[in-house]
Length: 299
Image 1 (cartoon, one colour):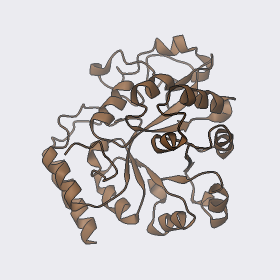
Image 2 (image 1 turned 60 degrees about the horizontal axis):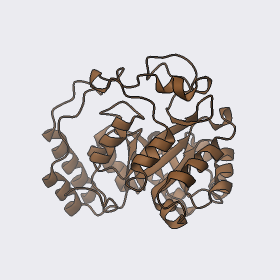
Image 3 (image 1 turned 90 degrees about the vertical axis):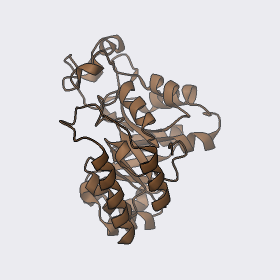
């Protein structure tokens, strides 16, 4: 309880340093100060992982290079990103099955060529400061951030994209730094999905890459199912709505770890840390206390 109160006090103190955002789309004013981040290091002894959900998507348009760069600058441990395939078979970074919500275009992702997808503006919907942002490819993200920050790659709707596992594995084998050294890849890259069949296929291609199963229902978390999952996956990544201390303990007892998504309220963080979660997936990576795992954090 004392540790929880310390975490909460530090988080509230940090929040008071920042002007209240007019909306979730408002660009950030400041990052955490060096003094505050240093205090986190001194007060907390956690080993959680700070994962930026679609990049720092609370501050920049999701799944763009701008959002990924901002998360990197904020000291996140990993970038979470969604992968689908264009009509001509390129691995592209976008969450929705269509482009309407986050671009000035229309149509299903899989019905558009890479050239057509690249012609879309995926920044202006969020803020005019980001006009001209384009949909990145997985190859571009790996080339820019691979080896610099961890990548949590979600295979989105893989049943719509036969062969997506091979496409992603090919990019990682060609472009990921240290791809020829399995121990390096396993430290910097993880693949996740709700589709366990897709994860099994990917595991056959790159068994050295850790896998996470995205879970939205407690019905999938029986001891029997966890034992089955543990045969090929090392992580169960659950919705924050499902989190309890007993659930986290059950996952750990099955020999697996867990990342929790998606955290937007700073007041949720103390409970999650006290519950023993292994990682926090958040739109606001600057609101998560610095972990000792984060060797890049500036202090």
